[in-house]
Each structure stands twice: as C-alpha cells, then as structure tokens.
Length: 210
Image 1 (cartoon, rainbow, N blue to C red):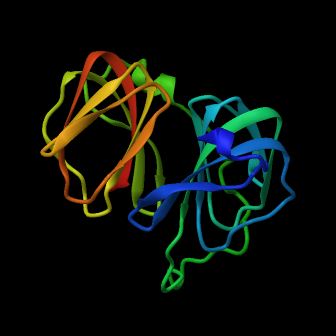
Image 2 (cartoon, rainbow, N blue to C red):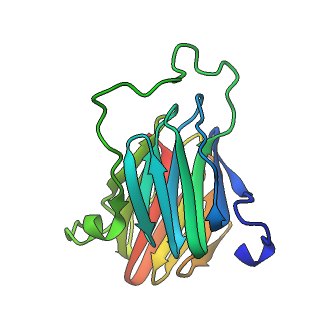
Image 3 (cartoon, helix red, strand yellow):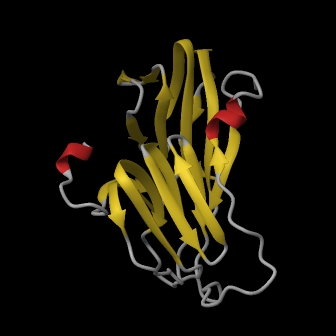
C-alpha cells in the first residue's frame, strides 16, 4: 500500500479503532517543529528508520520500534531514506477532553524513550500472552508470540487492529477466515468473535481499547 503514496508524510488512513485513527505514511526528508495540544501520537516503524527530535530528547526508531509523543510536546521527524511508519492518533474529540489539553512541557519530565518489540518477545512469554508496548488515551499497543491455536477472543466495542511482523497468523471467524503474512494488517470489527492460530511462532501486534 505504501506504493500508493508519492508524497512524503502524506497520511493514508487504514481505519479507526474506537476514536483512534490507524494511519501509515512514507517518511523521507523532514518535517518542521510542531506540537499537538489535544492528542498524543504513537509512532511504530514498519520499515527503515525515523529520527524524532523533541523537547524531551532525541530518538532514532528502526523497524519494530515504537515511541509515544505526548500531547503538548514539540517535536519534528526526519528520515534520510524512504521509510514506512505506522501512526496512531486520536481522530474524534467531541469535547476536546476538557481539562486535559497540554500547552507546555514542564521541567522535570522524563525523556521520551522508545520501545523495541523484540525486547518484549525475547522474554519468552507463553503463547498469546501480550506485553504492553505503549498506552494512548486508554488504548493499548501490545505484542505477543502466536504459536499453535489461541483461545477464542471477542473484539472490544472499539474493534481491534492486528499486525504481523514475523511469519504468519491465521484468523478464524464465524463466517470464514483470513491469513496475515509478515507485514500485513487487518482491522476486526467490534464484538467480533475470532480465534488465532500460527503453525510456526509468529510475532503479533495488537491495538485495542484497555
């Protein structure tokens, strides 16, 4: 799908999980300093690398690394080579979360820190036991190792995003199924019952409420 984008930093929206937009874009070149006072931004690099400079430090993200930039934090990003980045950002703000806007970065805040997915899965958790990568406005980005057949799950009222970074994962639904290969993403509708299975250990990323 990234081949459909010929303008760097132009967002292509994959869909919504609750009120959070799931987007991806091609990063090449740089963006000027800016900030968002109403919403956090969560970056997850799919391919290549992305350097993010902020008031709270500098980070270079490579494939399968994530970083949350909180609302109100000035930042800019750049990439020397063509890179593909997933971006999670709240889209629907009917009340702008009254009292929770952020205009200023106060002294003493911790530097921003990236999270590497491999560090979480290398701890050898049981199959399908998720480890939290980051939280965004009550939504959770997590990673797990899929191996064999998983339990039946019900997508929350917000739906769920599934993204496979290694090997393949099958999805069983009441009306059929699908198979996600490495690098593929799907959105499962709210309240849908599904089961996952992987003939070989696979790395699965989820984004859902809670």
